[in-house]
Length: 384
Image 1 (cartoon, rainbow, N blue to C red):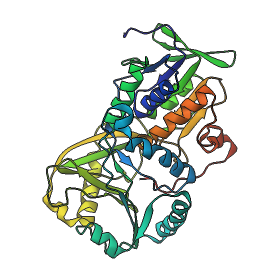
Image 2 (cartoon, rainbow, N blue to C red):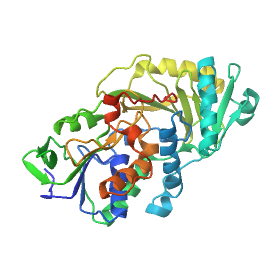
Image 3 (tube, one colour):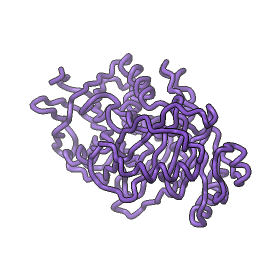
Image 4 (cartoon, rainbow, N blue to C red):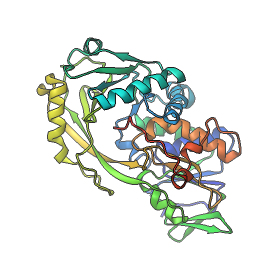
């Protein structure tokens, strides 16, 4: 059992990128009596198994606004934390091949223009010129935003926590919370085995396990974990050294450069609920089939390695962010449906603002837990 303090002002459950960002932003606001508890090891859950995508190209205004808050912080991450997040701003290239998706992305282009997202519409010929190795025979059009790209999730965590620790925040690994004390309508403590940490505020940033942590406080959080597998090829020089993150949107197939190889993946044909994190080799034939169709030159590549991690899906593919209402002092920062790395900077800032009683940089009502009871959900179309 790790050495645990007897109390803290704020306890953050989960030391992935979201929990780390919250700790950093609280420390920046002078809230340093903070402890981050991690059931396994820092960045050992979904964060460390993420493809690292960073994008502004979402279909809902709230998700776009989260990205508009997050991207500038990732761009300045080395300046803010002293750690290089390896943010490769090669852009996201969405390939649109169906009528349904064409209509949705035309609406998104209007939204992006209104909000100042520097995305543009590309013809099939423009798309081919951007990456000549692509098969664009069925592409109606594409969307591209140069400020999008991918970063290293583990470096983001390392940078956030280095600054937070320097300010006095404590981080404890191998500390799985198994009880949350609630009395008089507010949180009083969290428990790890026989150890009790008194606190005024608990932040549930436990990723796929956030529903289980919420239940300890009597809070029902609608999160379902789903397995995703990522494959990486051996060194492969048939593609440019730098090229965009490419999304074949209708199928969910995606790929980007990973060191000297190519990282790729796509959703399974059927979602299976649960916490399995073994590699889903059954999805590989479909990934290979789509890869060879979309990028024929990949026939020269071979698979080097693979790993699996968990998405934390909500019913509307939007996160749950902010005070839950009851019990008082319990906050949620979870349910990112695969977008936790890219939205962690904004969410860390928003949660810190709410905890200290400041006006939040964004209206959190669209992300509140109460939206599910009120029926005020807005589905995110641009989910992979």
